[in-house]
Image 1 (cartoon, rainbow, N blue to C red):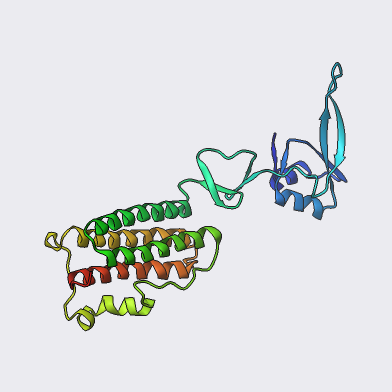
Image 2 (cartoon, helix red, strand yellow):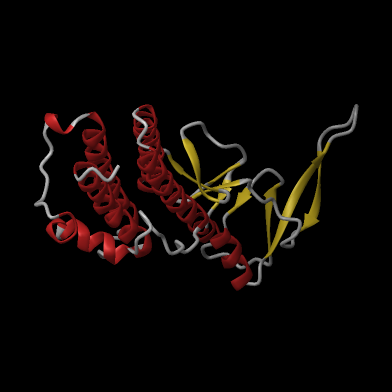
Length: 252
């Protein structure tokens, strides 16, 4: 099996004037090569080997059309095709494959790891009978899962609600705690206790996720896609800080 690309085709057909181009049944034709043949009005012929018992292999031909072409199962985003998925690659979207260190795949892994840490904090809150905190963490977990779903499916992130507040409320509280708790900003220290420091770890953890998201969504020209997800991740870090303030104020 070989892959017929547009560049290979141009080299092979250089200084040739033909109306038909033959390939083997197992060969793969890239979309750009197919478009080039169509542009030049060259008919693609697929050679199908038929072997009968006691006979030598002989070639029969099938005229190609879009429905009868050999269609590879997977497409490599950087170029190339596969009939089976290599272990070192994974799905980006649909049948499009990328290496597992692709920025978007790394982001998905970081979101997955973050959910694990969030659940560990939820267990700790439950053991300490912080039921209101467990409920708030449930809402945050749903938001994080919504981010992952929206990215994978290419959907617009739905309007989110954290701690029963709008995103601008979360931001204002995190910037002006004295207005809402009659206390200044808190700075993490061991005396705050295990739950508070776990919330602080979630705050720093989601900031790291935000950096990986920027790497995944920023193109070569500096344009950032998925601003909806970027904004939600930014508000999540503020959300965890507000939860620390609530815990410090005795509201959990």
